[in-house]
Amino acid sequence: MVNGQEKKPGETTPNDDGLSEEQRRQQEAEELRRQQEAEELRRQQEVEELRRQQEVEELHRQQEAEESRSQQEAERIQREQDASLKDQQRARDMDENVQSQLIQLQNEILKMKNDLLEFMGLCLTDKPWEVYSRRLSHDPNEAPDKVYYGIIAELIKQYSETPKHAFSTLCKMRYKKDVFRHSTEIHRLTKLAFPNLPSDARDQVAVQVFWKSLPQSKIVEGYYNTFTKLPKQTLTEAVTLVGDSLDENDDEDDDTSVENKEVVAVGYWQYNDSGKGKGKGKGKGFGKGKGWYDYRPWGKRILA
Figure 1: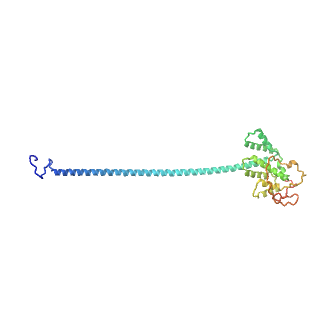
Figure 2: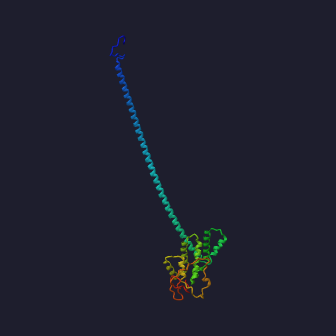
Figure 3: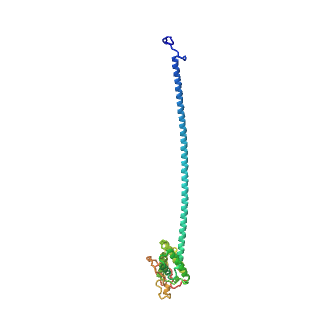
């Protein structure tokens, strides 16, 4: 019974808003459906917005990664260029340094040779090593270079006061032993003057000194021209060439004084006389077959 009236079977009772119960349920279901659709649309919009944000963030990350990679590549290229420039500069510096050292070494060697030639020329005075001994006795601890240049200075003075050349006696030397003594002295002086110079280089300087110390003459010039054609130009070969050409069996009663025959030689140098030549001497005044070359000896000729 509704409102004092009895409800019949199958009859719907209207609500206060004029809708039946069935209509109300349909309305509620429609409202719920619309709410669900709105909620689903909202969720889809949120998902789409989140996806767009993620895409934007991923794009930003890719751009940052690309920029970082480009920057690292640029830095790497710059480092390689800097390293290459440094290597090139270092190589140029090394080349310049090597060239400078080479030029300096060549100049030092040239100066050593020139100084030694001058030194040996000055040592061709009478007993020059008495000056050396006096300097060592005066101050045994004096630096070797001061001793060396000091004795050169004193020898210059001594040489200027000695008009007679000590080894002018070579102009009258006719004995092989005298040439050996002369070369022995040169060898000793060379070794004493330049102890740190390699033996081969020192020998070459001694060879120059040997030829410069001989008297200038056509015969000596002939010896020298022959010497320059030898495959091995050493002091030993020079001494052999000159010494073996002298006549050791010449007369002993020559008017050459003992003073002129002797050569100062306080050192010792072993000479290898094992090589025998094939001289074709046929009489007095010629080589006796001990040398390599058949030159006329100096004999009693006095060379200027």
